[in-house]
Amino acid sequence: MAKSTPSEIEIWYDDSGGNPVDISQFVQSFNGIEIENIIEETHTFGDSFEENTPIGIGRVTNITLEGLYDDVAGGPHELFGAALPTNPNSPTRTFKVVWGNGKSTTLETILVKYNRTADRSALTRFTAELANAATAPVEV
Image 1 (tube, rainbow, N blue to C red):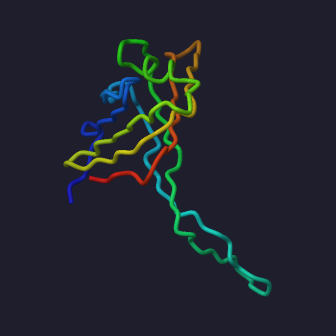
Image 2: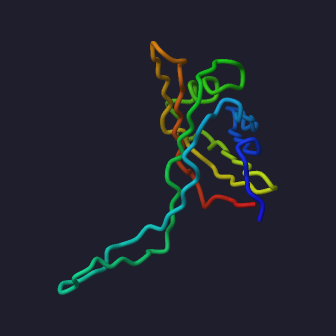
């Protein structure tokens, strides 16, 4: 098994026309793609420990991207800043991470939040939060 390095990571996000845009050079960190089971507590009276049972549904927790703010064409402000609020009839946007070594994860997303933060001692930063909009992520 080959290891992945930061220089191999690519992050892609659709623009408003559905065209994939490589935003790798704007993103300095993201929290990954976390997939989890939804479970139900199933312990009963008399049990001394909590018991849980999966209900057969999984979810992808929200994805957070962070980096330096940039208003260049194809940059984070153009992609995220103009997308809120989102009309319920708007198409989802594809988010894709290329992990390196030919491996990638793709999912359809909805933009939840976009934030710019200013600090008198640092460059302006952006944060974008994405929610899974459809089915399970596609792993390649």
